Image 1 (cartoon, rainbow, N blue to C red):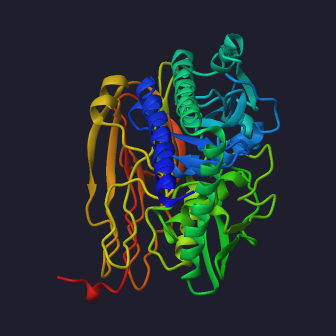
Image 2: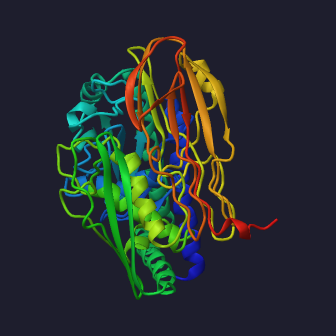
Length: 502
């Protein structure tokens, strides 16, 4: 395929994924999707290889191929759609529900459309389904194995009701799942239109060439790196002590191997993650280090080999709890890879806050400081690494939930000093207007985000309830008038501070 035709096809695929995302965001009912945009969309070829994704949530997108793989061996018919969230059968953590739809043209399957969204609640004992102290998967909510939700265009209403009926606010869950179905139908329609316009064979050639093109570009950038071994160590802040992660990264020619042997074993908490999440974090880091503008598809990850021993924190076995693994462990995996290649690190946490009672559930992640670059200051108050969501606007928060925003501001001076400074974190203080439960899953409260090249670390984060400091993982009850304050970490600086340009 000539370069011009390939770029036209790449643009069409990217536009289709973007439109899927717009349909999902504008059709959803929950603030978590319509305001924070905690959702992702992608297209796949008939073999289950991701050929394009919208620039949504890195931890969703890198792991979504496992969802398609989970249904790949099943009989596929036009109009079908599959639903799943089981972390050990194609999912990540339970609130992330994935819908996968086969796409047909002229009676022949030409690919898959898929969408993933973080639902505000998926059942379980804790409102919001993000408990800080879960020990098994069943404590985190409803587990959905790969199941056919739509059969030849007919929605299985009984199955849908059996799923949402075990969750809080079933009407909102139902609406958000229907929004995902609408997004998948949009992606299927656009891919079918491409097949009609260009022919099925030419479309198949374009999908194959997209993967090869991304691989060539990624290998070319890896080949420019110096061969050799790089190592890094870091920790996760579990409730009962730190858990160490180790990385040995080897660059050889135009390929990279990331070996996490020696990392902590899976533990009796929820910082475990399935292999798909570890792979997702590695894919993100590789893209950052090589060519961020390469088409985001499976071809870009062909030069990468990841080793994570089964039974370790980074390749857990069921029924280990995983609520925090998807959000916090994935962030640390990305940190490890970036640190091994000499990068200053960002806040390294999503600062997960969940609030709720029988009447409502609310979940958000909070931005913080990004690490400085070798030639620029790090940005402030942004979602870094594996998260790419927006914040929940104060107006939407106070309108929909029994909460009052007391303060929302930059945490000035929290970025690490250096020739180039790390970005600053944020301060978010909320007052409860009704009794509710809270859960905090955060990191970098005991260990600061490190700088690089002589740059200082960013400030550690803090969680406070009515002025009293809380641990990184905390849960409890808020009475009306109680105030929960989160101060997110700053990013690490880069280079010696005395060399800072004036």
